[in-house]
Length: 300
Image (cartoon, rainbow, N blue to C red; front, side, top):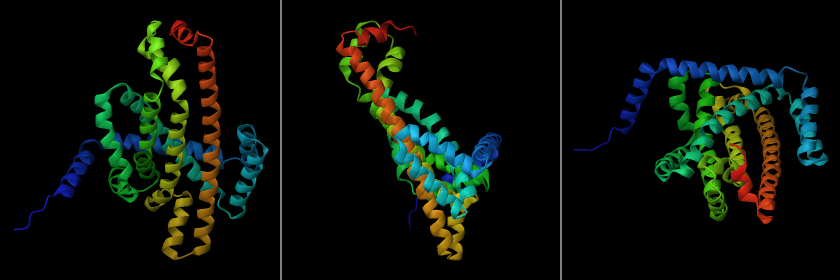
């Protein structure tokens, strides 16, 4: 007699129960996802493309200098030239919404895990599971819970991209020098104040690396989400695959690469500058002998 564990059947039954009893929750989430997506898509795709490119180029100039600004402008002009601008802005809106929700959940969860070992012991295997699950599998429950469209794409992207936010936030906070934390405690600082004024500033480079990875994973998942009707560049990649349209696939693929490079450099520049500024400020105060006391004496 052949023995088989009906694990898939259990999961399917669980999803059926969720659909029957929590449909109101996922209907609300779907409306929220779509509303935010439409708002960001209007912001980026509504104005003339050249105006948006100019604004982004100015931001790139302040972030990393004129070379990055010129490269950003040329890359986005290429996207316009291959007629992928609207799709690229739709994908950008989807990435922003997905990354926002992934960070909204992931950052507090990472902080909680760093401060509570029991939470960390539970979170780690869950993040292992989410990080190693094949990306296409996330689309199955997403379609069942949200149907076809933008909402399932955002939901699947959040699940796929949340792990780095949790892991690197926990890693950054746990990696803060214990002597600095103990100095803050010696001056009577409460745990919440130590977190805000010592641990988070010193952990900022690691946290921003997590933000960067969340955005990159969101962008990679956006292409796969095109298979469930999310549109954008992923939609054209899916069309080119089904129709064997090499030209369309290459144009959409290169546009994804350009977006990825721009987003990576932007988040990397912000994380590097912000992190180094906070670290130097705190360490500079500490070298003068009053760093921990300043953190402890500041008002809550």
